[in-house]
Amino acid sequence: MTDETAAAPPGDSADPPRKEWSRRSALLGLAAIGGAGTAGIGGLAYAGGRFPADRLTPARFADRFEQVYGKHAGFRRNHAKGVSAAGYFTADGAGTEVSRATVFAPGRTPVTGRFSLSGGLPDAPDTAPTVRGLGLLFHLPDGEQWRTAMINLPVFLDRTPQGFYARMLAARPLPATGKPDPEKMAAFLAEYPETAKAMAVVKRHPPTSGFHDSTYNALNAFRCTNEAGDTVPVRWSLKPAGPVGAGSTTAPPGRDHLFDALIAKVAREPLRWRLVLTVGRPGDPTDDATLPWPGDRRTIDAGTLTIDSVQTEAAGNARDVNFDPLILPDGIAASDDPLLSARSAVYSQSFTRRAGEPKTPSPVDVTKERR
Ligand code: HEM
Image (cartoon, rainbow, N blue to C red; front, side, top):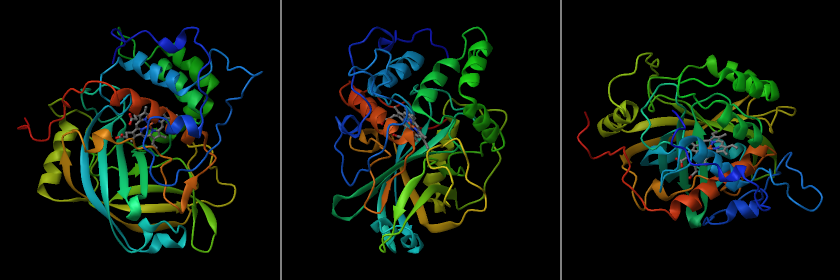
């Protein structure tokens, strides 16, 4: 990906003071439904009654996506390429041990989902290493919702929003080589050594063959509270119920081969994942998504996610959902992870921008005759 056509970064000019990260800014422009947690904003201090001009704000973060990927009206600033999906979650009741959220009581909850590839290009060619995403919205009784956006990496590459913001520029491929500038990358990794460690963890978990057999991890920690009022740290994952294939090293033909395969599989039979809750122990990091928890942590198999249809993005389906990770039901709350409030605020900024823009058809068309 080159940035030759990228818009100038408005956030890099001498800006007037901007809104600080906050739950309030996170909720601006978004119809928040359900209990949303509050979270700290780690490390972004208020200085001397004014916000410094170089302060990282939701708008500046969204500007950075536009700087790196260009501006694509109507599309998400990240995970721009995707398809909408629908299905249901069948809880087996085991999750009630740690959370009183109604989604964990035995029974079925309808789900709206979205499969995506990371990056801000709606028509990026599918490649195996591109991060795969799955956003889910659980429609709980009485209008309550649980929204979560997960990816197929075992850890996140950044501990702080500032790290992600800096990495986007450092990792931007040079037009001449198609690879990041080695000097910029080395300087970035020296400043953010946690990313180098996270990259090593990611390397040990190569991608699977497609969307259908990927494990999707929420990565950020949350706090679950059960009926008795006991609270524990939890990270959740979706593990494929079917067989897992190795990723291909040579890309099959077709710009959309990963999406094509997903569409064909769902047309044949519903896809299933187990929702696994991993329970942290005291001392396990809840504020650092670059660090895996020890492998021996207790897991609870809370039930099965079934995806039985996918749709081209359109008005009224997942295209118009903001998978804000802080839209949480009673029984699940945010942890002290600084990424959570940043994500919520930037997703809201991205959602507000794209909601006000003209829409063009999604390049991933489920109804089209696939090649
Ligand atoms: C500071 C950290 C992060 C920032 C600034 C960020 C930014 C964004 C933005 C701007 C969007 C598009 C939102 C929209 O328009 O609806 C997005 C989507 C997404 N993000 Fe993040 N992200 C961050 C961390 C993460 C993490 C830790 C995960 C996974 C654990 C993740 C997974 C996803 C997924 C799956 C989507 C697509 C959801 C959908 O289909 O709408 N992101 N992200």
